[in-house]
Amino acid sequence: MANAIVEKAKERFEHSYQSLGREFGSIRAGRANASLLDRIEVEYYGAPTPLNQLASITVPEARVLLVSPYDKSSLKDIEHAINASDLGINPANDGSVIRLVIPALTEETRRELAKEVKKVGENAKIAVRNIRRDAMDEAKKAEKSKEISEDELKSLEKDIQKATDDAVKHIDDMTANKEKELLEV
Image (cartoon, rainbow, N blue to C red):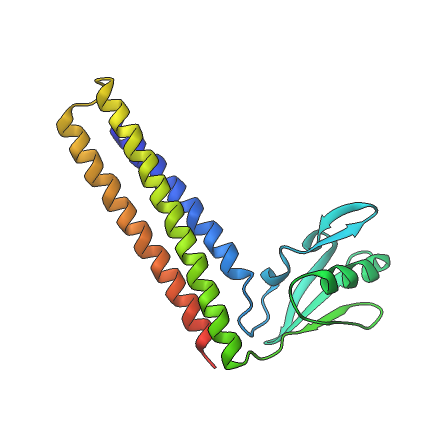
């Protein structure tokens, strides 16, 4: 019972890391990265469809993304969706593919993005603390219903806290790495 609570919390921490990684992937760092386009949906035959299902996205150069639609008739729709997104990059349509040239970041933009990264990291830590709270509540309920003893509860609380501390450190490392990547010129 006790181990199940800790394992469940660790599994939820893992989901937080994955979510944070996706979030960081969508923050552009002056380099081309196909995950920049993950959140873009294209109106395709009347249905919003993720861009990565309509086209292959490649990185031919360090600051260029190449979007090659599987269906050439969707080129205009893809271009429109990229223009309408919050990316801030103008697509260049040559009739068969779309090129996105990622502009070099200014110092000011880098600092703004670093602040954004910190905020996203903080939100991930809040999620981790909420997971810890849920695990602690579950442990206390188990003790109240006499499934575990008071000593086991104390031990379990220590295990949960250690797992939480490890998760927070992992998030701090991920945040620091993303900030470093952003601030590199």
